[in-house]
Image (cartoon, rainbow, N blue to C red):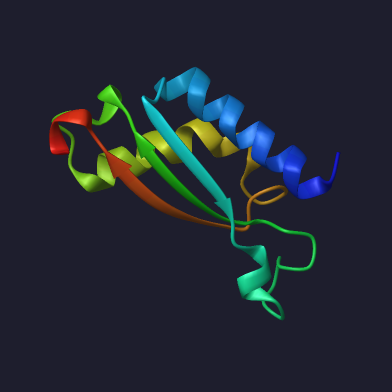
Length: 91
């Protein structure tokens, strides 16, 4: 399995376990960051997630929940992560 695909599987598994999303879209944007640190072996991702866990929370707390879920991967597996966090009642 390619490194990026393995990382994406790890990200998905951790987010699904912790936040039980109703929708999860994960994009590898590493190719858009060629020449930037961490781009050579992947590591730049965009995560769009809809989860009941975000209901009633401000944006910063939503992002903290995602960062907490993915803490084991930051540094080694994730270099950069763009987040779009939505609660079902926001839609």
